[in-house]
Length: 194
Image (cartoon, rainbow, N blue to C red; front, top):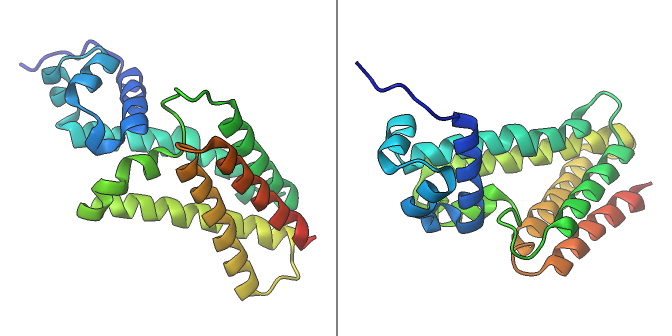
């Protein structure tokens, strides 16, 4: 008969998520994951199979609770320029509000998978899927707010905005003012289209 799980999986995943967010996949030690979750190694392995299984659960939680709610207004039926500006304004506010010692600086996916994605096709697919989802959401809002843009203009502008967003999340870990400037630039790009 198997052991009965005596902890809340969501709480454990979110605690581990912050460790991965701060240290990346490779830098997150099992002892740090044990300390953050309050679980011992055998409980972690029993619940998630491996460090990678715990990481995958943390990434799925991040996509579901952080990324997709932020992208939702961009793909809503009433989307457009206001949604684009709202996206970059909310990202700006989130980056500006984080103290230097916050484990949540930058993007969990970008922070965690830089080394991992080079060696792991599944991790590469997750990061590229995020990039694709972000670009598509930005493109949807651009198309709604700027119906006069051609298909190539929509594609290139969405790529520029996605690059500014992702770039800001990379830089947020080391230079918060520059990350904020990149997000302000994205807003300027959107306003210049009007």
